[in-house]
Image (cartoon, rainbow, N blue to C red):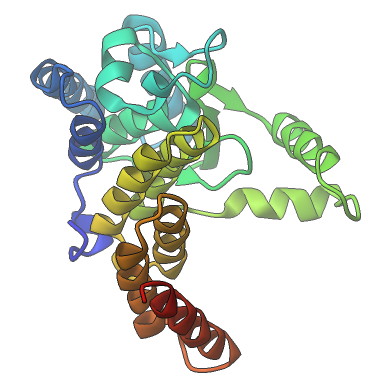
Length: 271
């Protein structure tokens, strides 16, 4: 999967594979069967739905938010089941990124131009149609967000960060960031890695990082994360191997010099 062009990645199928790696005891066959049911229903929606982005968003919301009762888990938000696609299909609950993959899966089958938006602290979706862009919040069952909703969400994010407050136009420009399928999958897995690490499960966080490298083998940041986690787990030989990938990938310059110096320090720790 890591070698495929982005448009050839099967988003839901890859997320299902990640879920199997994370929870091998879970019923992945049941989840796959359910995704197939959703795909058939989405295919049936397409001929009867127009080319309006708002209409497409409303139809998706009716199908997934109402008929199948998919919504956000407000009570146990940080539960890791909320970012495991198998568990999300079982419970019909999840974090925004876990739910969003199901929405994206159905929209792709229907042939609609739907994509993730790299919104800070909250994953949302955009749909492009003849009437322009419609933005929806899958955590709220597919609620369509107007400019005031988005501006308020962004303002709340900015309140939690130190720095110059951004004006509305500056904030809204950030809503246009369109994510690739690979980016969506990495955001899903980063949620898992972060929660495992903050919960003290360093080995689990490392496994998740290694899983991400399966689809993003050229991501320097992920290799650096693997270096740090291996060091914390006192797996110095593995840390050296991961640092070798950083050195091989990083462009020439000061950062490359620092990476080579770090590589030498790591190697010396093996002696």
